[in-house]
Image (cartoon, rainbow, N blue to C red; front, side, top):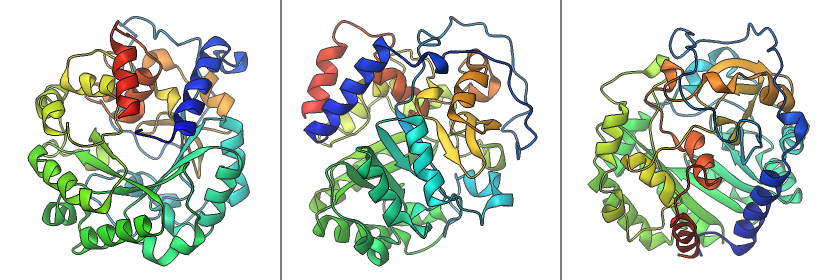
Length: 369
């Protein structure tokens, strides 16, 4: 199976339960609080009047994956990363362990993606992972892999816990992307150490305009010798601080880049759903379901999404009820025009929005592979 049975069954049960009975307190629409904490905007904050159809789940909102950022500090300055630039004023701050776990409880999502920054620089990362697992949640720990050797003794293997190691290509191009020589080799060493110790390991790759998809095939072929448990693949998003159109793509560019994804990666275990991949190819229309992957960081609940910052909310309910969700997404806000990132659209695929007759079979076949 692509994921452990308990993880798949638990996630499916959570979705079924919440689609039937979403929390009513999350469906309210109230006036937003004043917020002066926005460090910068990806484009001038021009919200246009919504021209599209209402989101089919606008009144049945619930989270699927919590993006937890306990810190934004990092040992790298990756070319396409906006976090270390957007949160420069709070780069040395960390969320206390108890507050991180309180956010997990408040949100209640069955999956927690621990990201940053580099979360392996968080002093209590082992305790944080243990605390989330005690809450019967599943974890993706997103890391550049450079601290796995040093800190792996702080973790215990668990079928609900994955190291998610970032790799943007083979050695030369990955080291260019992260702006430091030798990172690829250290990341591979981290993968080998984690697998030898019995941990689940997957990889995460960001696709840019100049990414050669055949090089990613070479990368996944290379990783097979280490028995890696899966791969995540997503197009990049252009933050204003790094929004160089030489590396970021339009929607048409993304369709062209991913048109052969089925053929190229058929042999590999992609953790992206077939519905989302159809969306990337341009064969499927999906609305953005940004509330499905809420972000919590040093400033609070980040609204509206992992990529755009228009507000930080004190509570998860505040994020859900004070965000004008109908004003965001493709065709509504210019900042969303070319975004096709998985954190906005995989929730739509998982929820079966705009489903077709054969989708259930596709998803079942994908999960069992």
